[in-house]
Length: 238
Image 1 (cartoon, rainbow, N blue to C red):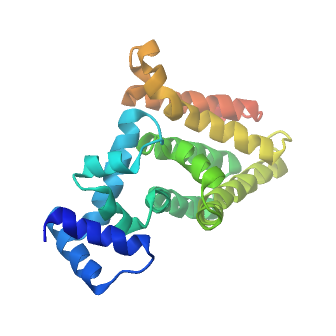
Image 2: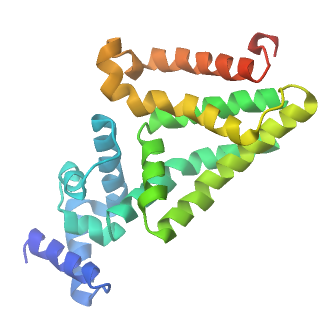
């Protein structure tokens, strides 16, 4: 049986919702031949690379497969569907940030310092994964209810709650002026992600600066200054 025939067997089994013994054997053989033990990560990396190069989360299953050097049926075997792949990608990309967010909330530092670390962390996450915000929004908006609920519960809701706690604590201590935490959420996340959502299509208008590491560092400092001054805090005094 050729590789393409083995991958077709996998696809047939997944499409009918059950993996037969033949498909399991085919999956093992084809997956080992093409991807080895780290097959899932290779496919996730291919999706990441493609979205970064294109500056968009709108990529096809076949384009991802070509990038990984396989065919679409093998992706279906690993993830079930494009939505399954993208959901796994979001969960992988946000796991580190969520762990750091939990640690941040427990730190014995001022709300201002927590907000600085929080904003810096958001920007670093989007710098590593510039497609992430667009992908999150699309999956929450368009995906089936189970995937959408998972993303909301595992990433969006914890982020909103953590930032709300920081803002409310800052208001209580007098470090921040009174502001609706929901307004603050959109203002802060918008300031952090817009650069990375648009740097590919807009990059040629700025001589490629948005894609340069030095620009990201200076942008981080500018965003912190803008956000903290907007909340009534002078960064240089803290």
